[in-house]
Image (tube, rainbow, N blue to C red; front, top):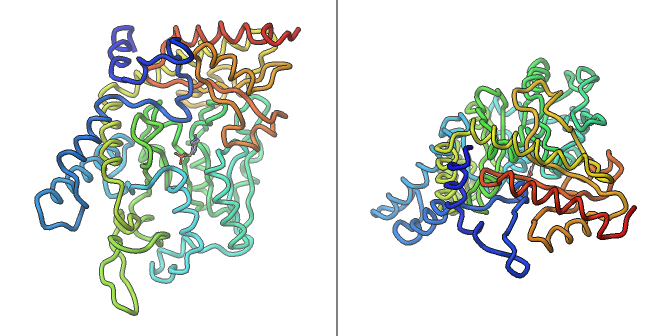
Amino acid sequence: LSTTELAAVRADFPLLERTVRGGKPLVYLDSAATSQKPQVVLDAEVDFYEQRNAAVHRGAHQLAEEATEAFEQARAAVAAFVGADEAEIVWQPGATAAINVVAYAFSNATLGRGGDAAERFRLAPGDEIVVTEAEHHANLVPWQELCARTGAVLRWIPVSDDGRLDLTNLDALVTERTRVLAFGHVSNVTGAVAPVATLVAAARRVGALTVLDACQSVPNMPVDLHELGVDFAAFSGHKMLGPTGVGALYGRRELLEAMPPTVTGGSMVEVVTMESTTYAPPPQRFEAGTQMVAQAVGMGCAAQYLDELGMEGVARHETELAAEMLKIADIPGVRVIGPLGADGAGEEISRLAVVSFVVDGVHAHDVGQVLDDKGIAVRVGHHCAQPLHRRFGVAATARASASVYTTVEEVVAFREALAGVRAFFGAE
Ligand code: PMP
């Protein structure tokens, strides 16, 4: 993004104008946790409540019609943004919920009703689920639980010293026994972009389903789910400039058709008798109960906002910011966890502006506090990826992450503040 474009973008985000810690300008480097929201998204939600608020899909009145139209237009906007068809996008409260919907489909008691196609969702003891050592807990714990319920076995692709996935033994890990290969598109710790094509090809060779955690990619780089060829994908509204409480599950049409629902109740049915129920086709089958309509409208608006900005430009901006952030590796005592350069993955974009690090002799929480005192907001802890932290022998890291509104000047301010951290704590 050019300086003028960036200034215009920043002017769209009211929160970025506020100050913190006694009048210091806010340097918000925690967008991987949740992004800030542009005024148009806030307005879209308020406008929905002020002008169109009604329950969707079932009212006979004008407001219900308008609410339904807004809800479905938002679905279309999100679908277009990620290269999917409308019927392939299911609203969910977030990525965590979306991944759980898929994981629970594999052990659902209603399996019999899906016919032969639903067989894809039947697991036998000894079947295998493959994840990676880099996963966010949201894309790990649901699979562990699935294995515990079904007797399936969890395996994982390890992470190399450089923070990339170690694919050396991929063929031994993804085999005829593999039923699901679930992996993150971009690590929320290291910023590394996964080699999607290689992983999808490995899964396809053995007929395994792929589940992509696209939480960190969709907000920051162009993502075309049809082109990537994954079977399922999950992403959250709040990380892509949209509201909290809404996210999306993408499923290839024929798989959603075959997939048993996990949450059952109103709105996801066709015919209900006292004895039994037939289900609505997707996406409604997976949208039981009153939906988060205002949030969905906000997420649709966020997708349009990003689309108008142009994701190619957003990704270039991210890459530039990543390079600026990675200069912290030159500060004595600072160790970056994960790839230092744009090398390795064989993907066009191989690293985004998410940088986790430790400072010798200083606890991550103290690093966070010193930066916070200067108005610089970073995240500290394990970022819901304990196994990956264990892999690098650390319990906690500090993490800086960027979004469309982040400037190079902010990253420079962060670097300068970080350079003073060890001296502040009297470390050598
Ligand atoms: N996966 C990744 C890579 C994430 O960064 C996050 C959010 N930290 C999630 C999954 C979970 O998303 P949510 O909390 O919005 O459900």
